[in-house]
Length: 251
Image (cartoon, rainbow, N blue to C red; front, top):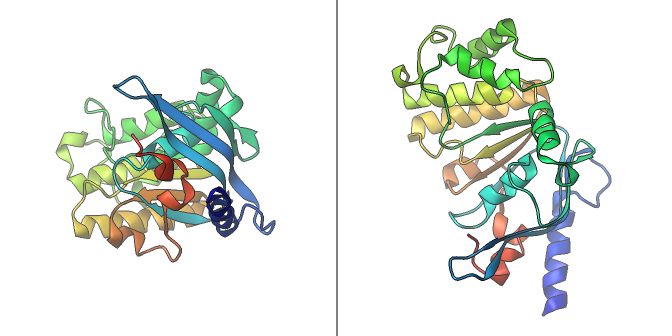
């Protein structure tokens, strides 16, 4: 049984291109594990990924229900959480080997993160929200570039508005602009259309994918929305990659 499971993980890794040698990897993961202490005091493994790779301009999607460990997986890649063990290579730098300050610096330089809940600052204008994201990047805040990106996502006339003055779809566009304004090498999208209706969901996904193509950013998206996943030709179940999903329920 164990050999069968190991063969399954190897097959998934092969499908992800980790051994193919034909794609320059922007993201490489090796033997990644993360666990948490349960309310009962036991330690539960949430993420256990043997191998995964994402090409420099590749776009991939994973299907996963709530509790599957997919958000924890993205948080580990972004350096928001620290791994128990394993390697997370972002453009050749091991995120898992860095301290908090250096993880923050690498995230700002290389990663754009699109959250389901937008996480916009209500007391700041649209332009200020995007520029605040730039303040942590390698080039610092650039008002002209921030305005260009907001124009690109269709918010040229809303730059001085506050988030509460925008529709839900417009707020998501701000979140997309903020994630892409630093020209990240890797974009992580966690249920990016989860708070949108069908029309806005389709528009937001198209915007994310098109903008990533324009900037040459790799895209890794996780969702449980079948309409979203249908837009990717090779969407996979996260449970097929995450060995923890077989061993025990994820937190």
